Length: 202
Image (cartoon, rainbow, N blue to C red; front, side, top):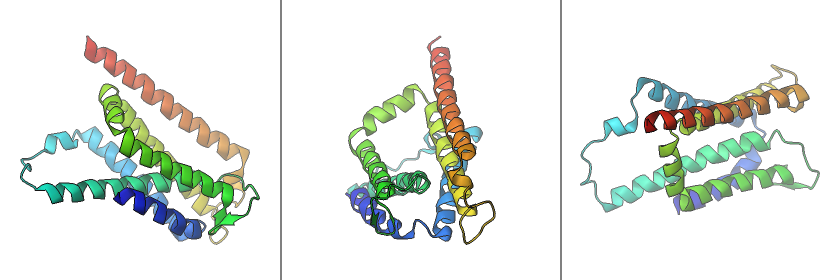
């Protein structure tokens, strides 16, 4: 319930703040942080499974609190990723919702909705998929980091900063680079996961 309320309350708030470069910068840093921290932990082999301790006596309400916090954290991740993708899409000219184009808002809404559906209804299947293909998790965090890079580019091109040309995020060159790298990450993650599964089956 916490993620549902937080997700859709944040959606309307973000629609007013999405074009503020400071908000874009914070979102980019957050996405890069969670991606890099996961990859570093993976490289060092300090996954949470190695750190499990005897906490079975935490109590029911503490467990509920932890679940809600995890839900909200997942909501923040998916909403920021949706915003990073939405604000760089072409405007539809269908008016505005809050401070953002209606079409871009729809992408943000769908991103939040998909995240909610995954965590509520497909979590078990998703966990099984990651268990069978563990490298997909690393690929997913690489995608999160790459989306963070996209938000960095958009921030640097903001008219208030002008570090790079304002038109660059909308250019064909950048779009080809972004989606090309995205596809390569997905292909790499799948191929490595399949290879690892075959190796473990031997």
